[in-house]
Image 1 (cartoon, rainbow, N blue to C red):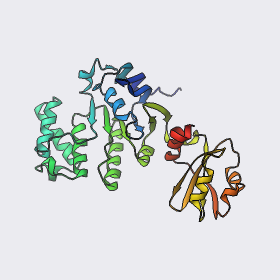
Image 2: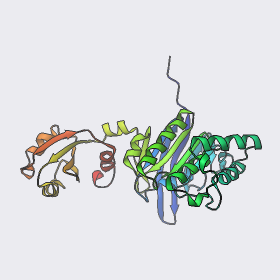
Image 3: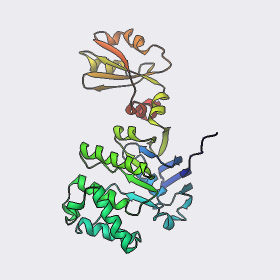
Image 4: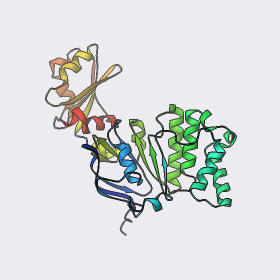
Length: 312
């Protein structure tokens, strides 16, 4: 019996967005399946937010086509907005309204009928620990509390697809971890999620990611598959002269990158080198090293090999 073909919630082909002569997004192709968290990973200015705004119908592409939940964007953007949730990078709710007032107002915007509105507002306040804060003005809330309110608002109308633009950039690590658990609860309930981030640990939580640089997609796939296919071995070196070793290794044939992490130097060796540890031990530059060992790659290694110096 053949496996069921996954349902596609987003399909974009040749997506381009130009602002005068600047190409903020340059030829982006995407296929995102239902029931997953799909991440855009990249530095500020790489095109993540611009891409997301085109997928939600808020920006019109200069070139290319977008289909979201079977609707053509931006042509069907008005219909689409009732099927998606969107949490912007900066807190965009009303600071001079209370939690309850914000939720009631947004539930009217989404067109929820009276009885359903009261039920959903109560549900999201309970789920996101906002019940005790219902009379607090949004402008007086902490970063973590605002984040919970923004998420509660974005899912009030039970959207099929949720867009989150760098949702954890202003919260502490504990709030960030808890927020991600809430995202997986949403996925478990049938919601598909697209998220932008520049945090490597967050990107590793996604089912699939696209690495963006200067508006272009440099890599696309599950974190595990991207680590497997990144074209490099990862070797760590310990010793007293790590800055000298790094300086000498950079630019050497077979070396893609080298960066110090605490008391270790993390070196990316091209996978055409069959024995990366032996390769480095033979180099006179590593004389004095107390330890040279191969280690498991991580998503930061993938990012380095897919962008910037790693692509040269």
